[in-house]
Length: 239
Image 1 (tube, helix red, strand yellow):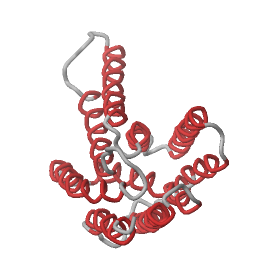
Image 2 (spheres, helix red, strand yellow):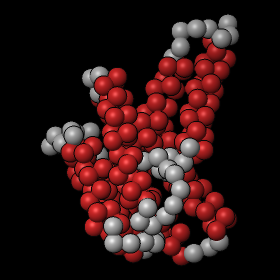
Image 3 (cartoon, rainbow, N blue to C red):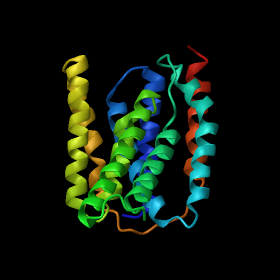
C-alpha cells in the first residue's frame, strides 16, 4: 500500500466524518468512520520527517497551512459546538516538532555524564520530556486530538522499524484515550465503536510498502481548509 493510497483513505474517511458532523450536528456512525483519518495523517508526518529534503520548508509549510486553515476550522466548528480550538495542522506541526526535539536532544554532542550509558539515558529522558511537554501544550491549547495526537505521531516515529511495537503502543494509546472518556462521561456504545475505528487504521499503516505512489503534494494541504469552508457555507449558514 503506497503513501498515495493511505492519503486517499484518510481523505475519504475525513470527508465522511465532517459531513456527518455538519449534517447531523452530533456523533453518528459517520463520525465513527472518520476516526480512521487522523492516525494515517499522523503516520504520514513521520514519513515526511524521514524523507523530506528540506525540513525547514516542511515545517514552514505546515505552519502556513495551520494559519490558513484556522478560520475555516472555527467557522466549521460553529455548526456543532462553541469554544476555541486549533486545527489539525497545528497538531501535525507540533507533532513534527516533538520528533525534531527528540532527535536533537537525544543526539546532542554535549556530555551530561562521564559514564556513557548514563549519559545516553539522561539524554533519552530529557528528549522524551520534551515530547511530553509539547503534548501537554497541545492539550492545554486545545489542539485537535491534543496530547493523544502528539503522542501517536511520536510513537509512529520511534517504532517506525518495529511494526509489532508500533501496533501494540498505538493500541494501548487508543485504549487509554477512550477509557478516560468513558470514565469522564460514562459508558456509551459509541465509545466502543470510536475506539475500534481509531485502532483500525493501524492495519493500513502496517500494509504501507514505503513507496510514495502518485504525487499529490499540495492537494491535501489545500483540500482541508477548502472542504471545511464549503461545509460551513452549505450547512452553517442555514443554522
